[in-house]
Image (cartoon, rainbow, N blue to C red):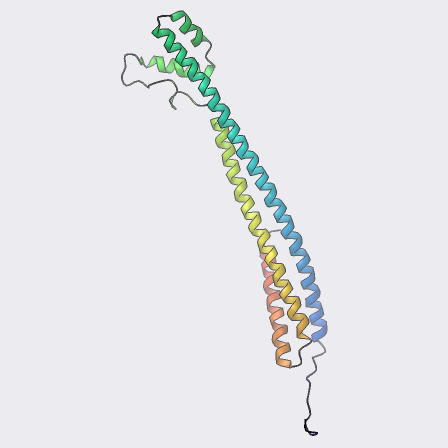
Length: 212
């Protein structure tokens, strides 16, 4: 190198270090806050999924019990028809008198249609307009609640993911803010510092818009 050659190093502005330190401190706090919120929303998502599973199981049990009960009711009705076919009205009445209230109501409504003479009568008492399987309404309500819970779980999971993404943004802020004070060239320092500021502002805006 020639003796006359002089290399000039541009010193960082005095304000750069304290501002950079402040940005890095805020970015560190932001990372901690977003990590906390992400974990909280993940827990909420898991709770909603557990509630969804509970409602879904409840609906399944109600449907199963309803079908088992309906099977018993149908078997009793078939015994009534068999007794009537055999001419044993006393046995037929025995079964009819022991019908549960909902089955008896459906049976009486069906008999009122004169099914043995009326070709337009319902084929049996267990059509939807005469008979409702026990637990159907409760099962439908449980499934509605289950669908609501799974939607809430997905929403909470999405929010958790957005908070987690913010921690990546704050990590970028820490990197470029720290690097801004180490570059020799002024232009590179300024670009790195401004990029850190821009990413920090974007991350903070996302936090403000996200639910807590």
